[in-house]
Image (cartoon, rainbow, N blue to C red):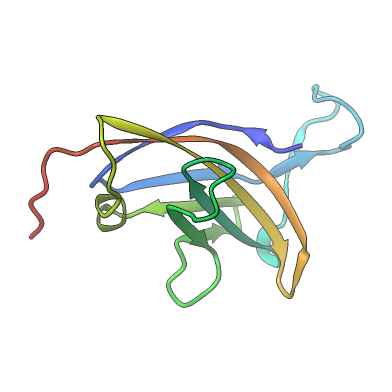
Length: 137
């Protein structure tokens, strides 16, 4: 079962969202001091994330991937962390009415070349708060 984590992004601002990728030492037992979380070797996995208006919506508002020449998801292999960068130019391009809007998202990992290996790691709500300043240099 995916973890649930909600977060906020300020439109027009840079935000780096960090996720630490871990698992229980023994996934069949509950968390306690004798069964702590351990880092997962993320080198052999790729990651992807989509943000949508709702789970039923067919089109994504934002798409992030760790694949490609300029990935929006980067991996820190030593700490087993992944970073998702919300760039000002990307969030500024999103049009909505009101002061803020709530989207849904989920983050998956998968083995390259095997789309059927996808595992949802985390899901939740991403709230985008509207910017007033729209001056770009």
